[in-house]
Image (cartoon, rainbow, N blue to C red; front, side):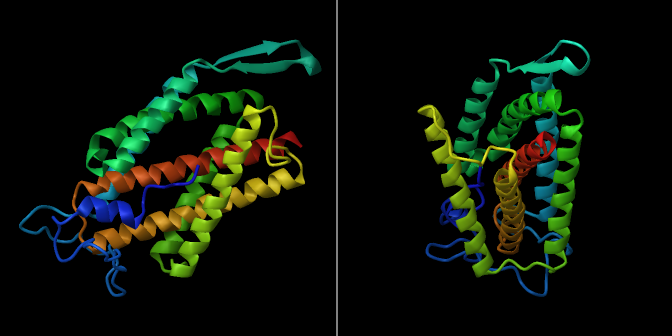
Amino acid sequence: MPNPTLNEKVFQREAGGELRDGWAAPDRPIPAAPDTVSPWTSAPPKTTGDGEVMTVRGIASATGVLLALLLVGAAVGWAQVTVKTIGEGRLQQVTADIPPLLLPALLVGLAFAIATIFRPRWARVTAPLYALAEGLVVGIISHVYEAEFSGIVLQAVGLTVAVFLFMLVMFATGRIQVTDKLRVMIMASTAAIFVVYLLSMVARLFGGDVPFIHDSGTFGIVFSLLVVGVASMNLLLDFDFCQRAVAARAPKHMEWYAAFGLLVTLVWLYLELLRLLSKLRSR
């Protein structure tokens, strides 16, 4: 699902009237990061008299904690899936029973995500809880895919890490610059994907479906490739906003909120890669 977390309205609302140097002042957008100083390569900004400010190092630490909790939750979710083997030889079939824990974990994760979005100050608590709940969901889904396609989870994890590092290097070195035009394009593409998935969910409630997007045919694979591409580009928006927020001296507690936003995009990217690989291996 598209990442609704790292946007200027949230940071402006959170900053309110408390912050320094005009950070997120009313009707003022988050300023662009200075051309001469990149917080990805420079020393962390100094603190001011009214509190500490967020840093890239702090965002990285918080993201590491959330990823670790996600893995813990995924391990628990993985263990809840029961895999059965029916038949022998070429007639052998492997099935995985989806545990009833999936839906509650999904709803709990959604609740913590919504709470984090509307109350970024709670992110230090709600983001780790979201990571644990989302980890349960990811673990269950991953084991179901792994039961049908052996080795697919390792492939999806490897590709997710590779895409993340590639996009980070491209952004940090300036090979890809996030312009206003690029932002609009990525946001419009993300919104279009969200609408397609929403229509698909509504259609399934009435016994139908959006044609081809879930199939392993050429159209279905091309669609998944486009979604993976858009999810990857969303990482650029996340990196860009973190950089601009650091340059604008956002408050320290926003590190956890930024890490939460990155985790949302990474989970989306991983699940889309899992879906794409399953389509490719089904052909």
